[in-house]
Length: 303
Ligand SMILES: [Zn+2]
Image (cartoon, rainbow, N blue to C red; front, side):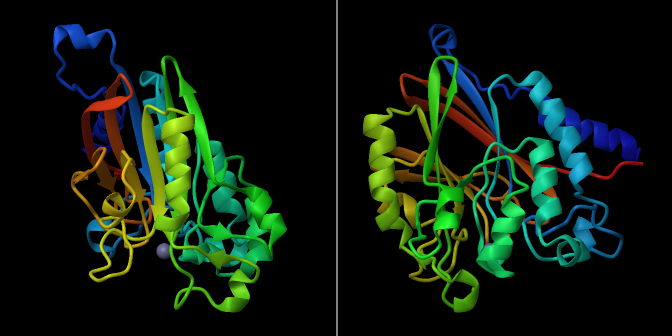
């Protein structure tokens, strides 16, 4: 029973989502799937019993299997993470994040970003762990003038090319104040994400002419106040098609759609601890999102 459940969830992760399109649209329409995690917090093993709804869920090995199955059947796919990989289990105390980044590299992540907890052991220890990551860390709102080695390791934006279309990606992190001690982010200053994102979004839209623009955000979904969060960003910085979120550990059943000047922004976040793998499917044509769907896929128990 449990095994069937697991296989069922893998099949769900791998199955092509049927986005209905009119006959004439079919040929000119490109499809892309984004799989994503956030706030995995060193949960390399599945959650044990006594963890409520999370009991028996998660685990890097299962996530790897689900991703491998998905890649086998989905030609255009990106695997992304929204930060806070560090802190939460004895694996972090022992391996200081090196194991997490090594395993994420083996699973085949295309990009991640940095969350506040990724600074928990300071910049030098973060860099030591980042040496085990064979994927870029997207961030455009950390000013690393005083930490040149970290500046070299961060990528403000990148382009992923697929047959017939281009995806632009960038990333933002949450303010350090109250979350990261000054000693632990020495040499790194935070810039408000709206300020940092505007020129990047303009470049990706107007110069790179991307067909889909994805922001990986460790800002939090809804901070219930004036602080900038994922719900505020589309209004402040139009032109973002997708926000893959993190930080607030928010379990969303489906993406939140926000209307902005240039179209809709689809915001998604799938809890924490690797309990779910998020899945977003987009149909694109003529540089625009024509259809979208999304859901969390539970990283379910094996018998
Ligand atoms: Zn966080």
